[in-house]
Amino acid sequence: MPKRVIIKDSGEDEGSEPVIEPVEEKPAEPEEASVPEVRLSEEGDVELETAEAEAEAAYELVVGKAEEIKVREQVTQKRFMETEEMSLGILKKLLQKWDAMRDELVKQIDEAASKYKALKDVLEQRFSSVEEELYFNQVELDTMHELEEQGRPISVSKKEELERKVPELRNKLAELNRKIKDVEEKIEQLRKMAENIYEYTSYKDLADNLFSQLVDVLLSRDPSLDIEEARVKLRSQVDLIAQREGVPREYATIYIWRRVKKAE
Image 1 (tube, rainbow, N blue to C red):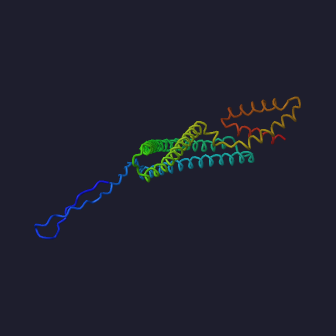
Image 2 (image 1 turned 180 degrees about the vertical axis):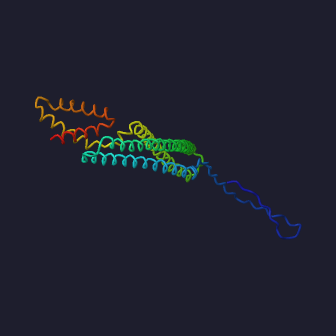
Image 3 (image 1 turned 45 degrees about the vertical axis):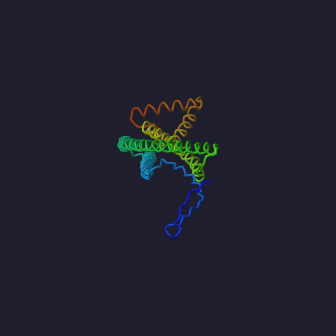
């Protein structure tokens, strides 16, 4: 073990010899390797949370408005079916109002899609940051393993910290990737909704039920028809009235049903 020499004053007269004492030195402790970290800012967390909240709120608004229009269609169809005095002219004025609501809904869908695109940008930025941190810490951990195998001193606590952190970052990366895919699905769903707004907001159960009743009436009146022929014939009549009167097929079906019931 290396020694250093300490010269002490003997405390005696000037002519006295100095006392020389050898002192053992302790070996220097290995310095802990400092591992810089790529830390994700709290600002980034707030930005992500805000973007998620705004996108989800916009989507909920769209879903709520679409459901409201569908309920209006349901109520209107029932009223048109039950009220003989309700003319096609009155019906069409109501339907124009629902169509105006659909036009407004399409704008809200576009706004929601924009919110989700902004959220996707934030998620992709977050993904990039986590990916950078993951690879950096993985390299640091691999370096420590290599140094340890070479018998060189390392910080055990830092190694254990990295062994805990690397899997956490991998899980975070997988979670972000899943969120990005979910957002992409939402954007695609909103795109299809905007392109087929009537299908997403129409109500068909009542008309489908009445259509089946009308098929039965046709079959009872003309036994020579089979069920598919009756359906084709009825669809042709529905399409003709829908085109002539400028109303959706659901209302054309109800109109025919009303006429049949009135004739009974």
